[in-house]
Length: 259
Image 1 (tube, helix red, strand yellow):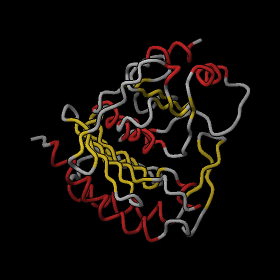
Image 2 (image 1 turned 30 degrees about the vertical axis):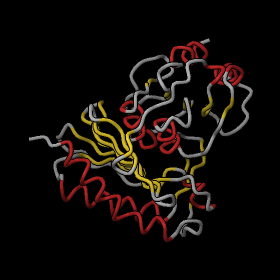
Image 3 (image 1 turned 120 degrees about the vertical axis):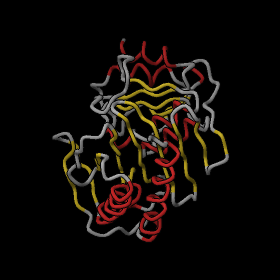
Image 4 (image 1 turned 90 degrees about the vertical axis):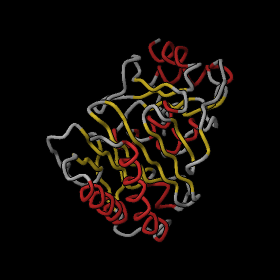
């Protein structure tokens, strides 16, 4: 019999096991290598990424051996179960390597294309964000989260979806001209959690990986926000892009992205 709270409890246990490893090597990770994501983007990986993913994968597998597990650093384990765990052992690896405290551990459980349980841990700040489908989002177990009430794009602040100036991004240029302020922190999971707290009003990425968003998107939606692809369709595991908002400005964002 399904027990969503058990899913969340086990994910929290797994993350708790990994947090000391995360903190110990923060700012001085060993074994830094570069891989190429999506055929052209440079992306660093460290020994710590691999160690954390191994810790979390082992704990999840020992509790739910029938579930599939898909981590960012190792080949996925595909089982017959409808459930898949998506693991990003260090979201914001560049920040982590350089000692910038905006990085996290992200673990999300999906049933098919539906997110059902999420944990995003910020070990350097001592914060843990959680969500269960239809049961709300919380910070540190007790602080219920709610997205902002900003109702106009011109008053909004968030991630405009780029880490470099790219003149060939007319959709992002349109959004950038309309919003009040753009902010880019280099860690999707915590940016989505900041949205759930009402600190940011939107998050956009023109290229996306499920590991970055699998946990954070449920935390946003359970806090009253909305998450789709740029066409307004459901955000699913193989979506190419993502837009998340406090829901009040979502239609405006989609209009600007579509042109």
